[in-house]
Amino acid sequence: MTTLPEIQKAVLNLPQLEFTRLAEWVERLSENRLRVAEPRPAYRAGELGPMTVEEYQAFEAASRNRHEYLAGEVFAMSGAHPRHNRIAGRLYRAFGGHLDGTGCEAYMGDVQVKLRANRDDYIYYPDVMVVCGRIPSEQPFITNPKLIVEVLSRSTASVDRHEKRLNYRWITALEEYVIVAQRIAEVTVYRRDGDWQPKVLKSLDATLELCSIGLAIPLAQIYDSE
Image 1: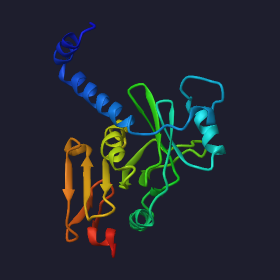
Image 2 (image 1 turned 120 degrees about the horizontal axis):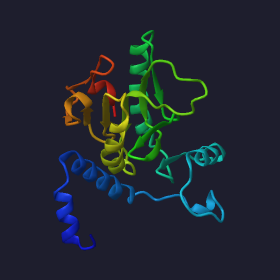
Image 3 (image 1 turned 60 degrees about the vertical axis):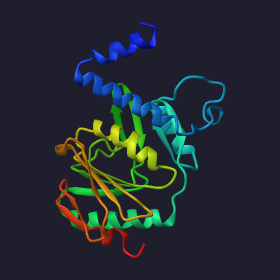
Image 4 (image 1 turned 180 degrees about the horizontal axis):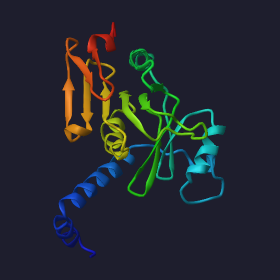
């Protein structure tokens, strides 16, 4: 199978499940190319090949900047606008107050989530997430978030809407993924029990219903005076 028509014919003959997985993989691949990887000599002088998770952990611990890990490659994260942090902070505080005494806990910013998509490992820094149950003290990553929220910025919007939207689905514990626009009042919710179809809220009068944690938040509270 070497020609494009042969490849196209083989793809069209795939079972539906395999066709869907292939389509998602291609979308992830195209989105990953929009990222700019950290120059390899900066972390593995003289070596070729992908970085292991353990090597990434050591590199990240020694770095002044934060990086996300995508199937062996390391990508630097840009700084956030104050508006971004204010929105994420309001959500984090709302989650924390609501979850007090429930056995669930909210995390913000500097806590990593690790997942495996197909055979590849990915490590991200979600803006806000909720985890229920005990996390082993020796475990450096969250692996079982129930809810993840990403606040969009110009540099991350495409990644959050495409790459992360697809990769986060591989987390078996995840029930909801929420994308919050920064510059306009717009919140998009994806739910596992809704087959990950988007529900978009575009009015400050609307209410964000988070079924995963039993919380309703008015968009006016999320955006406040932004």
